[in-house]
Amino acid sequence: MFNGDAFRDRVDKTDVRHVETLTSALRALDHEYGGGACRDACVALLNWANPLLDTSSSGPVLHRLQVAIADLHNLAGWASFDMGLLESAHLHFGRAMSLARASGNSALEANIHYRMGRVHLHYDLAEDALSSFQRGLPVAQASGSTLAVSILHANEAWAFAKMGAERQALRQFARAEDEFERSVAEDAPPWARFFDLADLVSIGGMVHTELARTCDVKYARSAIPLLTRAISSDGENASRSQSFRLAALAVNHLVRNDPEQARDVGEQAIALSGPISSARTRDRMRPLKQEAERLRGNEAADDLVSRLGKFMTSSRGAA
Image (cartoon, rainbow, N blue to C red; front, side):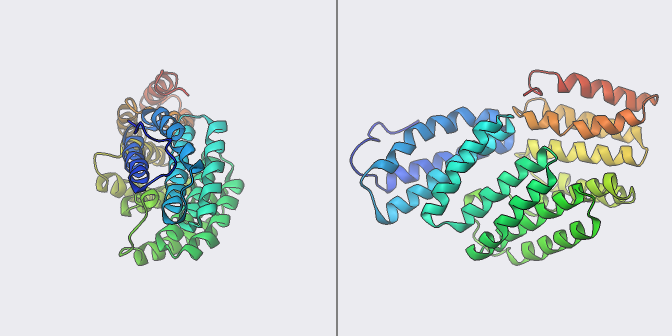
């Protein structure tokens, strides 16, 4: 995978391009198959790439190398988080942040704040998540990337929705939509390119799903078309995202007391999640299981609870 002459005195553009190209390929694996499909390779590449920072290179090559390795640590942190390896995730994100700041790349720094916030959000630490997103916003604005600003506003909305802060959630998501519209012509950096219209709509669906659970069940009616649109819009190389969306869609059917529809959609989520090497696919099924258990005694709800229980204790679903 790696060049054998990594430890010569100077690093050139070929070395940096090697790190960038492999990071891009590993990010695609993570997106489709989960963190378990790429984490070991990320760590191996870092073991090769990190010593390059100690060479006598300087100027544009060193700057580009710092950004490339920061982005690789960023991906390693995300893959570790996806596998439930929180200590490793925090270490990689910390290293990524140091290198992003050293290189002066504020767009990457903002993206790391976003990803650290998502770790908190996943574990229902909504206030901590909100703090991370809000720390990232001025950095994103300073970078000039409207896409980075949109990503942070959208995730702020998600955190507010988890907190039951209806007005703030809707306001921040509207801001995310406005910024996303302005970002259409933007040449996004590799770490932000995942965030397309399907992702924006998907987070809108997640915001309304959380509001349906924390504020008013009426939001399930608006969550369902948003999630359905996101599911139909995304390509075949986003299995993990699709599994999350299907699980959330099933939650909304249960909130609306439609267990038969929830079972059908939930079974799709389980089937899609099976080959994905990700602890998060298990974790994101928990709200679905909680809602299905609320309707215990209904045949469809009981079937779904049973299927979810088996999946969540399976080898691929477990951390």
